[in-house]
Image (tube, rainbow, N blue to C red; front, side, top):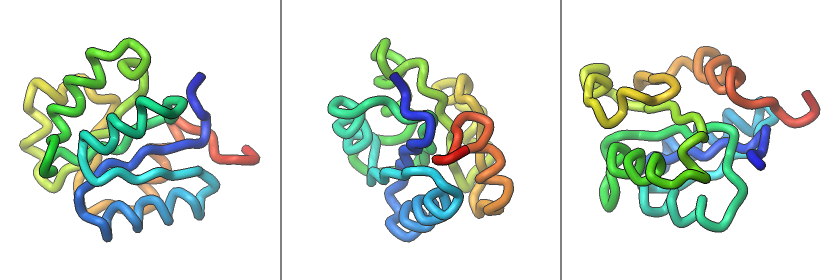
Length: 126
């Protein structure tokens, strides 16, 4: 079962990751951060799936595109909506992320970000 209020934020920039998690928590969500795709996969192996994954593309250890390939290969994780986060809109043309549930361009507009997350998740107490 997916958690209806849990968001996984995968970004190698600790300031970006922490600020997104804080913003989500202020909006009533539970947020978990991961510094790269491998950390995110490790987390997902031992947890109930989140309602949405926020995925940066350019990361060390395991890129967002590599994470997405592994996510889609796992039946338990393939159905979790993934929002791709990148500073480069052109990177959205890559076929490995073409099937994402949505795209967010850095720098993020906080209201637009939370409105997009709300399409996939219900904050606690909603």
